[in-house]
Length: 355
Image (cartoon, rainbow, N blue to C red; front, top):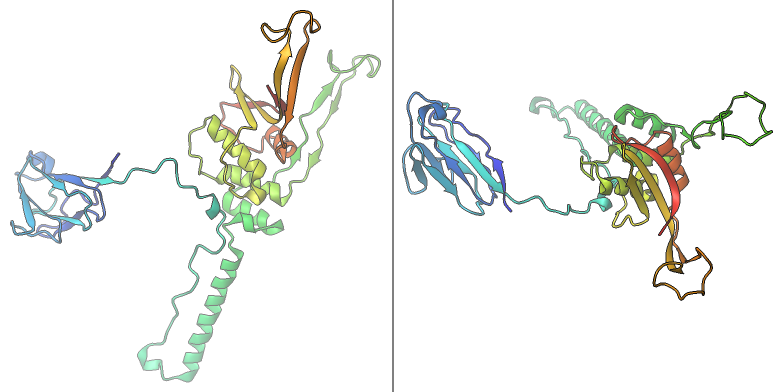
């Protein structure tokens, strides 16, 4: 399916001076000369001239075509050169629609390109030089050479640091880059939420004084560089788009679990992640490490009479290699470090058995 797109210009800036209306290498399109003077932006209607080979003239020729008011010019398919238009009056308005190739779906896999292996900015400077009347002075030439070498050294130093690529930083420099460039300071993760002992059904009898109230605060752990970078990638990476859905969430979770140092590994399946929703926007996330399949039990047509005990249910459990960093992911999610859309809240992040 073709993708319609606006042209480069839709009016003539200077009377008699041709302008490019559509770029080269498009799949086609059309140019319309409005029928009404008000739509052309002129006191009276005028002819529009179009040329698909070069600047358009102000009269018909072998290559220039005159488009009368209300007529349209259809841009040839697979146009390899720009399309030009011209008019006798400045401000002459017209409509241009260019057909571009459709957006590829599914998108091209760019996981192997992130993070970049080298600098993505300028690697060498444009050297300074002496004016001709001074280029015979050896001292000045040496000064310019030294200046160019010093400037190139600055470029090489910053390219070696590659500051915007936080995956390549560590320690205090990582903190400085993440806070300065991306506005995220290193968070501290906690193991769960505060636990209050005292209300009914929160403690065993004779283990707490009557009417006592005791709060157990969660342990707070320092965030390593690896986890810090994974958290940054959770917030910064835009490859999954802007629409929240189950696929968006599961791919983000898998990337956090598998992406060492915040990298973007290829996520081709998320079967071990289960996501369910509650009635008020609650989200239950389960990381599955084994699958239990019912083989027989007191279920109709699964066993003969009098061969099983009452309410007996036999299952066959198949272990699956557990996903790494599940505990850390739970701590990050429970601590609120990993942002979610405001209308959703995670109520549970656990390892579970899929049935």
